[in-house]
Figure 1 (cartoon, helix red, strand yellow):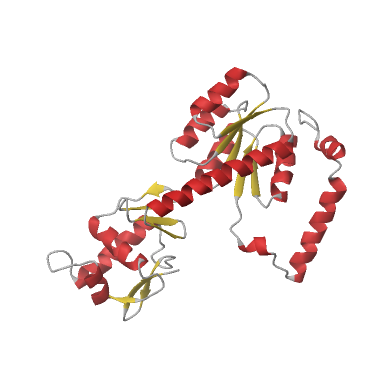
Figure 2 (tube, rainbow, N blue to C red; figure 1 turned 180 degrees about the vertical axis):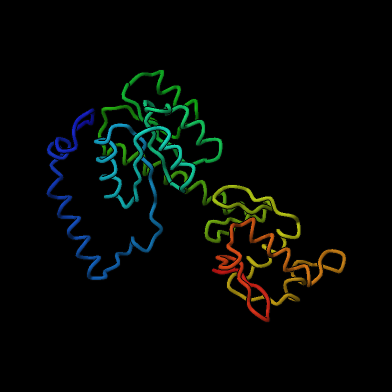
Length: 273
């Protein structure tokens, strides 16, 4: 059961999945209305981005990936796909090489400038040159059309699992703490937001490190100053607020409604869980 340029109606007719999918949708809707939460719903949902100008391909792959628990976003040209890949966090990208407005190769290169998200290259031609180009660029895997959607899903799961294992091993080697979209790497002595390194002053880093070591715990100004080993030549109680304000700006906190560093009136500061 291979997929080429065929309609979605024919795809579902060949695969014989239409009634089964309708039944699954109905069952999920009933569970939602009943307020039933499945165990896998408590785990962070993985996200996949499918970039392909063939809508039938995007739709069938989206269906199969959703059956495996993925949240799927589709894009139908290179420019749209690139914008989504750079503006939203995804666990995997399925990228067609032959795209309008911007080639898949160019999209791949631009994504790789700022992100290490796993990428599965897709092409309509089973040519060795295409495979070599994709893999030499650094693609995590490669598949040619026409393909079996189940094989694509198996490859996606393998890529994501492999990447997550590497990430877990890296966290063991490094003293890394995740707080929302912020990641504090104490071994590397850096703070990143959605993978982008933030340029902190030494004092700003020490303040965030102290707060992160006491997530959810309110610290007085005196306690915070003591934890960052500040003396009169480093920082004064009066200037702590300025450091906090600068730090909030760099981590993307709204000063009026901060998500991370909150002020405890008449007491001090704390880092929200």
